[in-house]
Image (cartoon, rainbow, N blue to C red):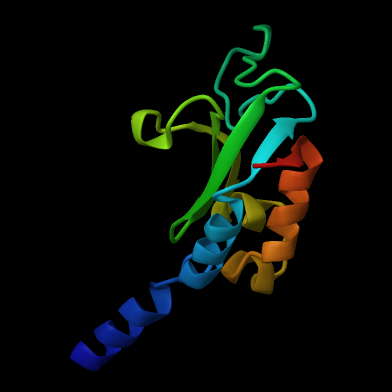
Length: 133
């Protein structure tokens, strides 16, 4: 009975959507870079009323610095204006990827289990343009 319970618990555990070394590698690369928002950035997870004007968290042309966070069920890309120190500003989420949404969208088991770094980089490139640092 105990072995069955341990096996069931282990089977229900999932890994982070991005491996820790991938997150570290991305953040090492992004640490000294600056980006410009290519378009107005609105939260992709907003809960505003459907008739309300969507909130713009960074208007097009805003210079930002970014970093990536990942947990078991999500990936977040956060941004802060270049003029602000990250230590004093938690940043705003500009990309939020949920494992449950990947399942709902019919993504492959492979993508649901380990989100491709190249795909995240492509999503970042759709909304930000690198300008150096």
